[in-house]
Image 1 (cartoon, each protein chain N blue to C red):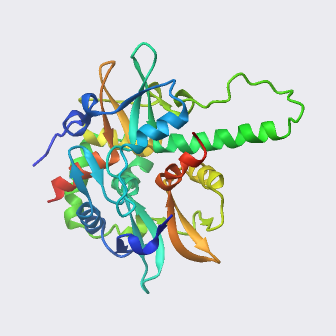
Image 2 (cartoon, rainbow over the protein chains, first blue to last red):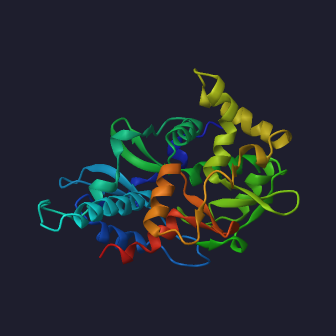
Image 3 (tube, rainbow over the protein chains, first blue to last red):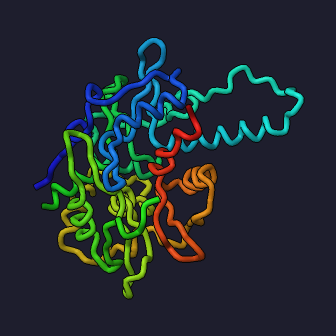
Length: 158
Length: 153
């Protein structure tokens, strides 16, 4: 009667999750994310986020679709700054926005794999996020999403 | 944007239990990849559009009262109890937990960057689109993403 489902029972294991480097420029990240989108009736087929690694292969963040909203906002700020600079007084060595600038760092919010799934739900609601990195101790082992949570609750109602 | 006609709808008087069933029915999976709209358009008594019900909004409703009132809130303890209660009770309706259309909107002529800023500011993934004050569609984070190619590379 009382189903003690744990996060690890419903999460997407890290081995199944797409990964990109934090140095990937936004244009590259867009291309990679698009590989997961197949347009049909305007709905998305596939993963809506990717995990991000640093130069040493360590997982450092998660890039979601909202990260791209941030990229647009950053680009608008940059364009605005440069528009008024006709004499080229503002020197910016690199104008390229990279994945690390728009991702959500892993350390911000996570949940433990052996937590009850409702604990994950509370974290997702309180942090206003739809993809939550899952740790076993300090190691990243997967990602749990609103949709996984929703499906588990629905199964229980059947 | 996605035209309103393309969305699943539900009555604002429907119970949360019914809402979960409707939404679940519109999803399909392929391994761990899901497809289907992540939200439902809510209709009022006269069939007019009154709100949006999102996945997270539905889940949040499960803890709405408890989250607000109990600082030592134990998700694990009430979680399944609440879900089984959902089956029988009919007190919580869609209208109690949906996001009313009046909260935030964009105009059909709004530029993409502005839409991005609005989605970020309101912490939502979809916004109703108005044309001369009438609702014509929904614009989502996903739709903004799809035109990103025009801005980057």
